[in-house]
Length: 244
Ligand SMILES: [Zn+2]
Image (cartoon, rainbow, N blue to C red):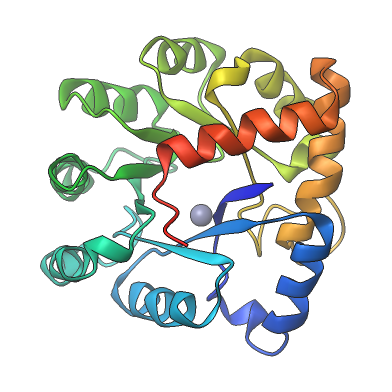
């Protein structure tokens, strides 16, 4: 299994990361894309990934971060492009209101991903339609919509555009996520935990929770879990650059 979106450099894992990664391996996780949200987080993400084979870094400036860091993040991306699995997380966050100032940094990073032939890992909150408008306008080719919360109409449009969508481990017990899972065709399906958040259980989330998520997905889709795991892993390998 490949966790297509997590944040393993997060404070929450500082004291016991080794044990968390060990549990992930035992659960069958063979790669974790660890995404970052701003400059210090991106630096921590790159440093951590050099020490752990399981971790594959994605760096980017998230829409809710300090947008004045854009140039520094862009230069970090350029400097380390050969190590990156993807650019992310980037996107639009319109949870309380529209934020036109987020659009420029988002577009810039999508264009850079295209130049570098990297996938983008997209955060979108209350902005499904706008994110899809920007991505299609920029003819983004390699797109991962992480923890997508758009309407079913947005989901169908994303599928028509050939974008990958990931189902979070919340599929275990969230009806909404189960509906999303049913709407995504196998060839565009990924799974993620978004660790340390979005746990289907009490407390901190961790990549080992992909195992119950895969089990649930297998039941929902009526596909044996080994077969489904193979399909999802192939999708992730096609989209992301997993370099070890
Ligand atoms: Zn995230």
